[in-house]
Image 1 (cartoon, helix red, strand yellow):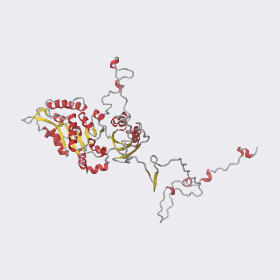
Image 2 (tube, rainbow, N blue to C red):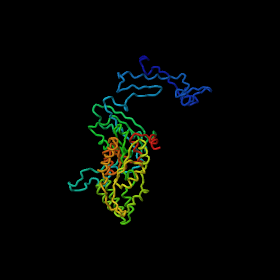
Image 3 (cartoon, one colour):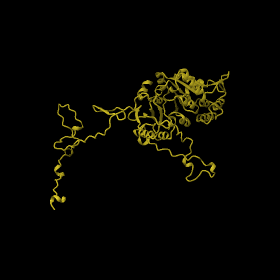
Length: 476
């Protein structure tokens, strides 16, 4: 057999030997990180292309071929990119006005990191732990008494401990993945999203996401989406509050903001403060506080509970309200928030289930436009009689007062924001365009359209789309 036909005897090209390529310099061998030689009077700019020197005789790989034309023509769904002086811009329209004749379908999701956990999960507040029922044992032998619901599942693992105590990129990615699990409106195949860090770019605590389109409303309404178990789970995993709103003109331009007073504008309950001044009997303050707590949870009707508490205050001097003025602890951020509303031309009101003397005084101090509360009867001797004059400002009355102020100011309900924490605020929160549960009881957090669990009520401005820079301008 000829040599040409024998692969084993074919002459192979001599392979380069490592010894013939070595020099005394590692940098020279590998051409890495060598500073370019700069002439004394040279003003040339040396970039990454000039870092590697002495390429004489080196073999340079040819450039990769361009991808073949696939027949696609740039259009509305595949806009061409524009590259000018190193800047890449994509002419898509996720945040632009919709085509003529079409309505905008964008939704705003505001993610707010909770610096501290102030309230228990609304879904687990009244549930027993899984250890209450031993494994493989039924709690009763009577089938009629067997529980219809399974034991509650374990709480999700907090992921902010892993990825950072802020709205991290992984947190945003997880939320976008969650939203992609909901069906889209008929005929829509793609979604778009964008984000704004409202307080800080590096470690934001507040991020506003714009999503388009909104999930199919015939499958899941916006109110149901807010209460979805996946949203609650995401909030617990990442220690955030998620506020979902339609991207409308009214979201950015409210004209009336209505507040509850106790545990909202102030951190205390006024009835409890009054009862704390009574020393005889010694357990009166505890009884009043227990009634207040149960009423706020929705376990007791507010009107009946309020009359019961006021009756316990019989015989106190009417000057007690003046004595309590210095004791009132205004919630953090409230003075600055009201100052910002005033600059924006937004009217404010306080609708309190407490006492009118303190409510009117606080409204005057803070510059609130409207103040409504309960009026108690005072005897000729200047003592509380334990009775209430007129209608009690409970949940129905708060709703009526909100509607009255709205009509008087000529404001649409879509431009009204209501803020409260108790069950007697639910009708007011549901009537306003945006009802915000502020560090609220579990029942209120589940029913309200938005919930904030922070340490400053100034965070309310983030829900209107203001950045930290703009908020600083408003409160200056």
